Length: 304
Ligand SMILES: Cc1cc2nc3c(=O)[nH]c(=O)nc-3n(C[C@H](O)[C@H](O)[C@H](O)COP(=O)(O)OP(=O)(O)OC[C@H]3O[C@@H](n4cnc5c(N)ncnc54)[C@H](O)[C@@H]3O)c2cc1C
Image (cartoon, rainbow, N blue to C red; front, side, top):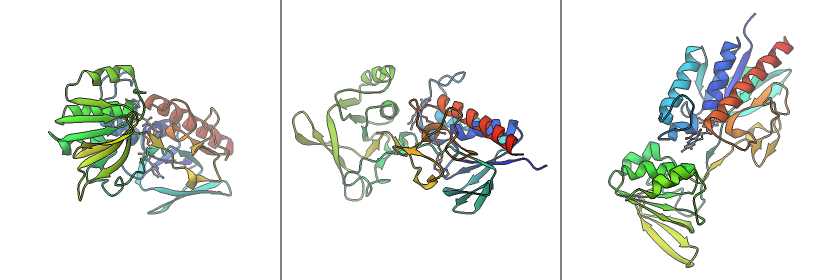
């Protein structure tokens, strides 16, 4: 009998872990990834909280997971899942380059960078405005940069950029950081970093390239400017799940699952940052991926 087919939407930690468990459980695993394997963690300069891999770069961690999944026989399709349907017990995932059928599906599409939605942001995106310091930080060597955000990503971005740039200005919306204390402490020890709290970013300015960021000083109610060549926006993530309706129930855009990662459609699971949960980290995405795969294997066994 041919192995049961499982399609995994996304290629981040949750998906790669699910693929490892599926292959070891005897099912086929096809990963649909629209950009590059590894997901968000590939943007992280240094991961300090993944067990057994202290101080590993996010990219290296992602590579290790991807290699393990591929060595076990996971198939990779570089394609975006555009829609999902279930008919007669079989799923079909429509992509840009083909339609993929499956006996079970795991949605592990994570979340994407949230945008500020202020003037100049879209126009100057790729011309100084960026959402990934790991990817684009090196373009601003010895230049001035601004980081916008107050969580772990913003802290990590600012620490990374301080080692490359002449000056890094961090704009936070409130009067403090909300990320890990150890990261905030490291940041405060860096000489070329200026932190400006209570700063609401209002506009990105520049003819063809970014020249400055305008922000409202919420204390003085005054608009000020931070001259810079690069600006990194790290204000969190946003799910992208409308395309999977009505097969899933959404809560603020995130997929609702039970503790087996089951959605409201039998045979359809969700894992990682895409689902309703409190803690979004690599280890929790891995955990979800493993549970989703084992649940899918049990579902497939009961179907045959
Ligand atoms: C800058 C940064 C630093 C971080 N640092 C840490 C850290 O130090 N430690 C830690 O534990 N966690 C960290 N995180 C969080 C961690 O990266 C995430 O919790 C984790 O990557 C979630 O994994 P995931 O597989 O659920 O989703 P993601 O990593 O978001 O992966 C989802 C993948 O799905 C793909 N995709 C999306 N939609 C589709 C579609 N329709 N079709 C096909 N493919 C699709 C995306 O391209 C992406 O590759 C950090 C995150 C960021 C952004």
